Image (cartoon, rainbow, N blue to C red):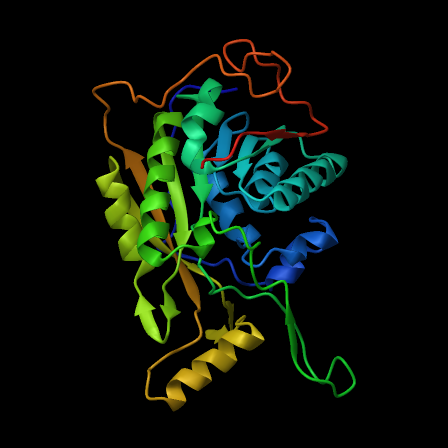
Length: 328
């Protein structure tokens, strides 16, 4: 693993052209079919561009809320090592499956997935303290998720059906918490991730505004505030396109329900539009003057008396899911 500071600085354009292909095409063959059941997946092209810009082969990339493992898959395909943490067990298993799939397709990086609450990430991944070149993640959007749609055209004239549009019913999942609690919890996760960064490492967050009862929530702004409150400094801000570009025109990639919701809001006098981009926020950690009380070493993450630090075995290329006790 490369733990030196990044040897050279690359630059992203202010607007990332990441929506030239629809999400399903970006994933086809690269991710397992069951992965599509996750309600809110990061666009693979966004993760891939960020990883290519801020890391080198052999570097470590971490995603504390990895879902089905998009960040991890794109990292190992570029020869980076990747560790993800995921709250929901079935999504953690999907992420592990996607890493196995990547390995079978020739990915040279190694990956692992830890099942647990990312608010405990400094203890769960204590042996990775100070080693990550990059953290890539995205906060959940509460009930504002996309899911899969079957229309009357697809089902022979039946009703419109939406599936895979929600997380589990576990109320401890940040996706189910009020926005203020979601943002506070996400700030705790960012603070923990900062402890894992090596010197010069960065945290990249993709985030978009969403609506609650018709009211626009400036989630990007709230993420910046909570990040700064937790010892991070905003270093850069980009727009990552969810739409395509063709002959100088935007090509929408909005989901069926995004378009329906925007139309419904406009009919009620609310100037809503389907989302065409996400904010990409890049943070650096401010220098720490004291060791975090959460930096704990020597924990048994394996349940078999094997200390996680300093003698934790290297992640098996076949990829397994390590379980970590959830925060209560």
